[in-house]
Length: 307
Image 1 (cartoon, rainbow, N blue to C red):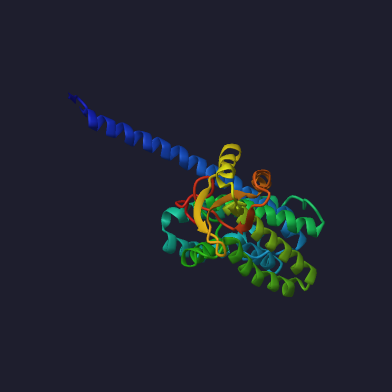
Image 2: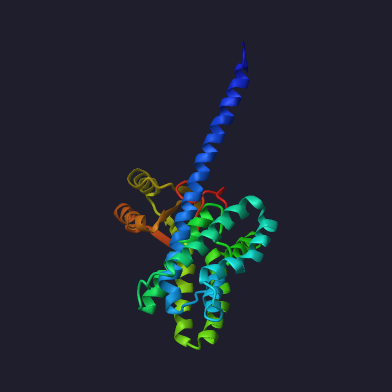
């Protein structure tokens, strides 16, 4: 059937395009709102914790903190200036779309850092400052990464390395890069304590960043060899809603055929599985090992982009 504006299919396509465009605008607004909030959190960690306590935790931010003691330029401004060549690399390597959000995040961090530098330090305790600064930096970097952007500096270099070496975790790469800056800060500040506190901040950032990006999805991998596999399987499925797989096996000595129950459970659930096995068959053979990563239903998706 034809309408003055075109066929039904044409009208439907236009409607879908409008809906997609509207959804894209909402998604874009949400993305940049989240990046703005994360950039502010990052600046808080720098201006109120690590910078006033002479802690240079690594990366371009750490270099900027050290350079700020040598030249009369604000730390935020130095962060922006040092990022210029790196941002040009980002445009070349990742394209303009990713670079735009990264430039936005980097510029905001610079502005917020200079603004907050006028406020007094949140604490004079350097240990607390290094811990708080490291955690705030990790959370903000992780959130910005999840939005498809970076905070500039080593984030871009690390992202490029992750594409080439996907088996390396982001936090570990940051830690390796930060170690160089931390060592340099000890020489510039002539204060070994400052370097040690910076190392604490860098370590804290590395650990928390991996948690923010990948989550604590470590689990227990169980092999249950029992004379009552069906009863155990039924209770695990019914009481815990945990998937399991029955594997055909045979005893090496007796030659007797047995079913081996294989299942992966998150750590908090493991004691309940152990209780079920004990109640159903106290003589069962239970092998417990750790699984560092699990993909599939209930865990991480195969199709999520590895950051």
